[in-house]
Amino acid sequence: MENKQTLPNATAVLVLGICSIVFSCFFVGLVLGIIGLVLSTKGRKLYKENPDLYEGYGQLNAGWIMSIIGTIMGGLYVLYWLIIVAIIGGAGFSLLHFLN
Image (cartoon, rainbow, N blue to C red; front, side):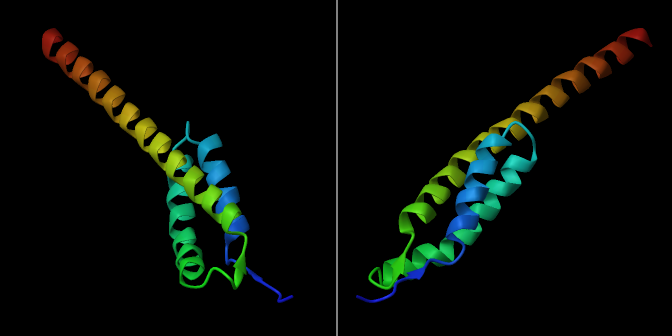
C-alpha cells in the first residue's frame, strides 16, 4: 500500500468555492471565485498527469465547480449593479437637464 499525496490547495479551493457562492451577492464573491479557479489549475493538471499518486481530486473538483458557479453569480451581480448605476445616472442626468 502506497501513501498518496493530497493534491495541493484542495481544501483551499473547496473553501474558496463555497465562499464564492455564499458571498456572490457582494463583490467579493467574484474575486474569491477567480482565486479558487486559479488555485485549482495546478492541482487538476497534476492529477490528470498521474492520478495514482494523488488523492483529494473529488474535493478539488467540487471546489472548482463551485468556484465557476460563484464567479458566474458574482459576475451577474456586478453586471446588475452596472445596469442599476447606468439607469440611475441616466435618470439623474435627465432630471438635471429637465430642470435647467
